[in-house]
Image (cartoon, rainbow, N blue to C red; front, side, top):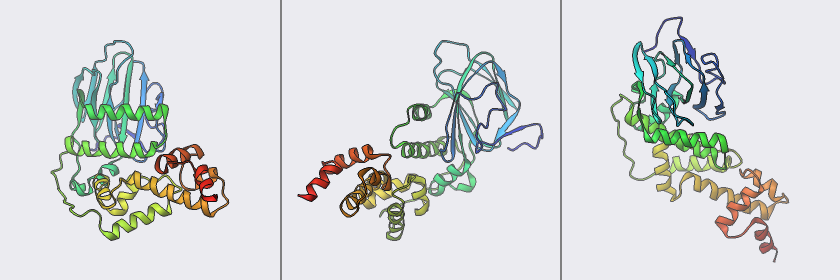
Length: 305
């Protein structure tokens, strides 16, 4: 329920540092460039927010504290007040357009994840009626093990980002969206059945897109959009059609193109690595050896003998 009260602050999570005006201190950890989701981890002194609402859905999570502390506080959701114990692992769900305010009576440590409504609509294409998606507000009084795990992995990705980060984040986004649709949504199910994988035309469109964009960061949600189905079903149907997951297929195509360039061009191995979408020469070498049993240099030497 979107309020018309002009005093309610609006948070636009598509903008950087969206919550800075709302809290005493800026977030200690923030995401950047994650399409349709935005992550912040906070350590705040005692505070009381003004009434506000977001343009995106928000999940707030209470992580483990380094020291034991009293974390209870109050939250007003759509004008309804409730005291929250805020135990480790508890989450709150605040749908887009729902007004809220909250307070913490002592040192606050919490994490928020904002999710664009467009993400739920994309994932829901063949799961529920996307025009009837309505999330149910939840106070921070209960735990959700899956969401807790996703928060932990996303935080690790921000702190220690490793190879395949975008693919990992895309997979987690899809899993989270499906979980929200299943467990926190009022929309009735709209089941779809696919028996024979992707159609020939859709499979061709997807594979042509992959081959033309090997040098780029190819995202699962982009491939699913080409096939005009949800990422959840796309993963299953692509594997059914190709015998490989999209990630495995993309890796295979990159190695095949690298082999071609090693044979037919004068490019260095480092240049080839970038041209086929690997972060660097070492990344190409590791994947090349894992799939073919030899390094790019050994492959070149075998061809010249």
